[in-house]
Amino acid sequence: MKRVCFSIAALVMVAACTEQPASTAARTLGGSRPAVALAAAAGDYVPTPAGRYHRSCVHAIPDGARVDSGGVVTRADGSTYQLPTCQYPAYPNLSAHNAGQVSPLEFSNNTSRVEWAWDSLLSPDRFTKLTAYWAVPAAPVGSYPTGTVYYTFPGLEYDATSSVLMPALQYGNNGLFGGSYWTAASWYCRGTTCWYSNTQISPNVGDTVFGSMVASNCFTGRAGVRCNWKIKTQYWHNGSSYVDSLKVDSILGSFAIADAAAIDVDSVTSCDQYPQLGVSYWWVALYDTTGYQLLPGALHFVDTVTSGVGPSCYFGLGGNGVDRFIAYHNDPPPTVSISGPSRVRPNAPCLWQSNPSGGVLPLSFEWYPWGWLAQDVTDSLWVSSWIKVVATDARGRHGWDSPYVTVSSSAPVCRI
Image 1: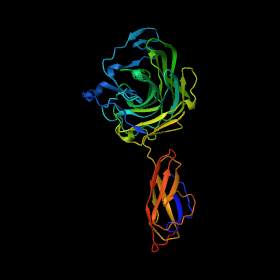
Image 2 (image 1 turned 30 degrees about the horizontal axis):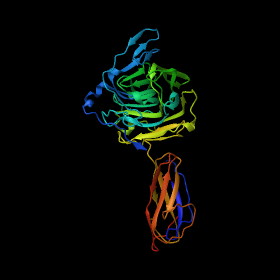
Image 3 (image 1 turned 90 degrees about the vertical axis):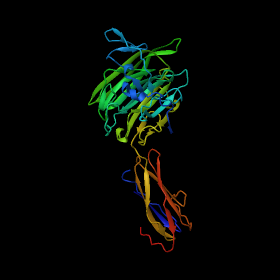
Image 4 (image 1 turned 60 degrees about the vertical axis):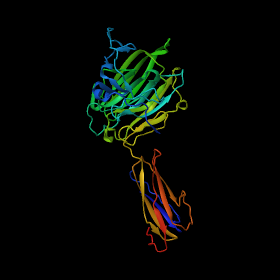
C-alpha cells in the first residue's frame, strides 16, 4: 500500500508519504484462411515449432546421421536412404516481418507465432551462428490433449524458402512425440518439409537449456550460398549433460533473420496452458560471416506480439533487448485504486492511500492533485478537483485511478 498525505487548501498538498506494497507493439500476421476446408484434414498435419506441416513431410533423422538438401540421409555407418518428396502444402508460422511472404494456416485462431524478438541483416551479410541459454519454465497447469503444443526457441530464418533452424523446447504431444512434460529437439524446416532429431531430450523445470545453430563449409554456387549446419540442443541436470543434435548438409540460404526468443503455440485455448510467468533467455550471441560475434550496438531486436490470436494472456517481452529476453505470459499489468475522503475542508490535511495489485515489482508511484505532478510542493488552489495516482511497474506498464474530491467547509474533518 502506498500512502500520500495532502494538506488541502481547496485540496492543497503539503506532504507526500509513501510506502511500497508488499506484493505486487502488436501486430497481426498476414495471410488468410484457406478457401478449402483444410480444417477437416487437420489430423494429417503436425504442429511443429515452425507451423503446420503434413505428417508425411515431417521426418525423424536417426542418431548420428546427416541429411542433405535433397533428402538423402547418410547414417553413421555410411549407408544411405532417400526421403520421399513432400506432396502437400505447408503452413509456416515464421517471423513474417516481410508481409506477404508467409501465409500461416489457421486451423483455429489459436495457431501462431505469438511472441518473438527478431533482428535481420542486410544482404549480402548473414548469420553463421546463434547461441543462447534459457531456463525451463514451470509447467502449464492447464490440460494438454494431443495436438496442443507450446514451443519456445531461438532460431535462424531464411525468407526465400521459408527455412528455419531451431533448437526447440516443447510442452505437449505434437502427434509425433512429447506429452504433458517438457521435451526438446533440434529442427530444420524448409519449404514443405521438416526434419527433426530422433533423440529427444527431456529437461526438468528449472534446468538450463543451451541451443546453438552453427554453419560450416559454406560455399557460393549459382543458386546462392550453401552451408552445412549443426543444430544442437543441450541441458544440464544434477551435474550431467544431455545433448541432442541434427546435422543438415548443403543447405541453401542466407539466414539473415534471427529470433533471439520466440514462442509458437498450436491449439492453445486458455491462459492456464501457458507457463505462468513465461520464459527467460540470456547470453544470446549472434555471429556474421566474419566469424566474429556481432557487437550489441549492431543489433536492434524488434519485440513483437501477435494480436488477435487465441486467448489474451497478458503477453509481452522484456529484458535488455541485447542479449537477455523475457517472453511473458499470464502477467497482468499493475492496477491501482485510491481510498480516502471524497469531501474535504479547505486548508485541512487529509490522507489518501493507493492500493496497487499486479505488475512486476518494484512499483513506482506518481501523484497528480489538480492534474499536475506532485513532487513535495505546496499548492494553494481553491477549487474542487480530481486527485490522480499512476503506478508504474518494472516493465514500464501503467495503472491509474483518479477519483473526484469536493472541497466544502461543511465536509467532515479528516483524521490522519
